Image (cartoon, rainbow, N blue to C red; front, side, top):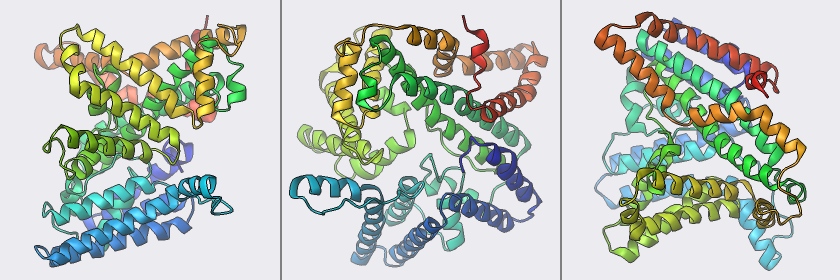
Length: 477
């Protein structure tokens, strides 16, 4: 079950909110959320629900033991044990086939590469449980004594599948006691509707174009004209951002509806003026996790230039590897490490001496070509892509099919680019500021807040009912 489905929006979520509002006490409300979360998670495969519950139980026990034996050697032993269990299971399910493939290629062992189905959301809830146990060890939080509450934290369907990675200390008080406010409910509905429209209309629309112009098979990619590859990669970059940020928008919105406050996960990364700035804005919960639980514990930048470089290298290898068990993701992480390293050494000073737009162009060019690494799982396909961009696949510059695709989706492209900037948000803030300061256009403000969520839901419904529906096609040339 995914957020951007008719069943989820108009049945599962609606039923969840009705049941939640009929519950009277916080205990009953938590039970409602736990039951719905476990049903949501088991929808994709009930057998992996046992894995989730077992991992939460292990972390619950280890955290209690760490707290009981704090300031003794046993505390560290229990921490290490929890990390071994959590990371061991993550490696088994997500990376065993990858490592087995390497071993098979070098030593011809094992004879057959095991094909293991990846449990949904395991990367997210593993990191959440690790952060919880580590924070207990650091004595930053007290352990949760109720297993059901910790299970709710790890399995909460708002963020269990696609993030953001929520720290326990952020929601600890809200799990124990929270109140739903009418204004936050309205904000949550608006935020969820925005995320749903972003996914159903914009991200899915970009995905359709990207899949057509940027096939993942080298043989098919070789026949795409150069302009098609350039345009396809642009749509793919927009799709990745709109897709990821849409799920974060929906998670934050659903949290607000019932009194949870999750941190922002994306802050308009495509307006960044450096790669460091980009990663301060992109997948913020993941970046902060690696900073707080890997980079800083390794010594951060406190142990000299050489050690800082090594620490950064480790972090960026892990960042790439976290996204998938494939070499292209590792290379993608190393690709950004190179630019972060250069910015630390000399590029930041040089960028400070030039106009801001130069830094922005530099950052977007780096990110743009980075998506090529992210897209192509084999080096052969990546080579075909770069050759095709230069017209070296005997693919020409543009053909009629590519021209028609671009014409049919030009308004989608323009709108997606604008939606990737804070332009709409700033305009809305400006209008509301006029209302608050000068008491101007109040009706516009009220109409926007009341009508826009309904309009977005309706457009999303049309997009989800007809998978090929694209409202921008009505404005084609």
